[in-house]
Length: 501
Image (tube, rainbow, N blue to C red; front, side, top):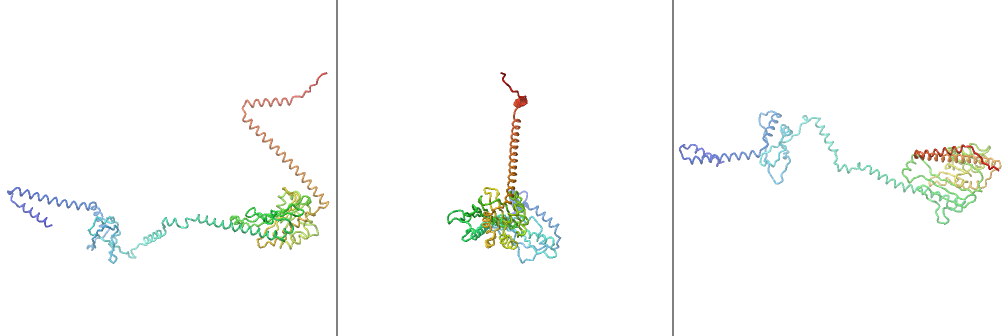
C-alpha cells in the first residue's frame, strides 16, 4: 500500500510541470500511469473470477429475505468464525455450539431453503461463515398435523425392513417349512404305523397259531413251509398278512387273511380318524368235494346280509331271507339276519350250542361283537366251488382273547358241514332248485352267444360298407352286376334233366 501511494504522488507532481518542459519526462510519467491502471484492472478481474456465478443468487436471496422477513430497527449480531483448511476436509454442515442462545428469527431463517446450503467450503477457505442455530419450537407454535405426520413417518421408518433382513425372515420360508415338517411327520408315521400293524398280526398268531392253540390242535401243518423254522405269517404288504394251515379231515386247507388299517400311510390314517374303520380277518376253508352236501347258508348283520343276498350269485339264486326260525326253537339275536336255501338247513346249522355260545341274546353282547358274516355254500364262484367263509373284526393287540369263541367256530363248522347230510325232502327241493338254476344259466349262455354272433355280423357288415365306400364307380358297377346275376340265378326255376332211353 505504501508503494502505491508513493507512485500516485509522483504522478501528481508530473502533472504540475510546465508545458514547455522536457518531453521525455512527460512521456515517462504517462507510462507509469498506464502501468498502475493495468495492475489495478488485473487485480479486479481475479476477484471477479473467484465470485463468478454468485452475484445473481445473492440478489435473489436478498429479495427473498426482504420479502419474508420483517424490517428490523437494529441490526442483528451475527457471530462469525474463520474456516480452517486441512488435508481431509469435512463437507458436512458446520458444528453448532450447544450452549449458545438462539434467536427465533434466525431459526426461521435457517428453515428457509437457500442456495447457500449447497456451497462447498473448500472454495471459501479463510472467509467468514455465518452459523445458523436451530432453536426448539415452543409448544404453542407446533402444528398438530405436522407432529402427526412426523409420528407416522417415524412409524413407517420403524416398520420398513431392509431387503436382506426381509429375505432372511422365517415368513419367506413358510412353504419350505411346511413341506419339510410334513415329510418328517410322514416318515415317522410310516415306521410307527408299520410297527403297530406288525404287533397286531403277531399278537393274533401268538394267541391262535402257536403251541397248544386252536389251530395247532386242529391242523397238522401251520405256516407256508414244511420246516420247523418256517414263518407262520406271510406278509404281502404293510397292512396285509396271511396265515395258512392244512392237514385236517373234510377240508383241503385254510387261508386266513388279515386286512389291517393303513396305519403306515399318513393320509389314510387321517381318513380313518374321520371315517372310522376296523381291522378285519377273513377265513377261507376249501372243503373236499365229497365232504359237503348241497348247502347254501349265510349269517350276517342285517345290513350286510341284505347286501350279500343282492350281490352274491349263489345266495341270490338259491337262498332267501329267514327272519324267524323253526317254531319252538331259539333263534339268533335281532341284530343278525339268516339267508338260507331252506328253513330246515338253517335250523340244523344254528344249533342250540352255537346260540348259547355266540349268537344268542346273552352271549352275543359279550362274545359276538366282532362278528361280521359267515357264508357256507357249495355253489361258490371260483376254482373251489365248496367253501366256508368267515369274517371277523380284529381287536387291538392287548385284547385278542375276546375273539376266542369266534375263532373256535371255524373248526366247529368244518366238522359239522363235513358230517351233515340233507334229508330226502330237502334234497328233492335243492335238486329241483339246482336244475332250475342250471336251465336259467343255460338260457343266459345261449342269449349271450346269440348276442356275440349278432355283434360279429354287425361288425362284418360295417367293414363291407366301409370297403364299398372306398371302391371306385367302375368297381361298384361290376360288383352290382355280379350281385344281380347271382340273384337272378338264385330266383330262376330249377330244371331237372333226365336222359331218354
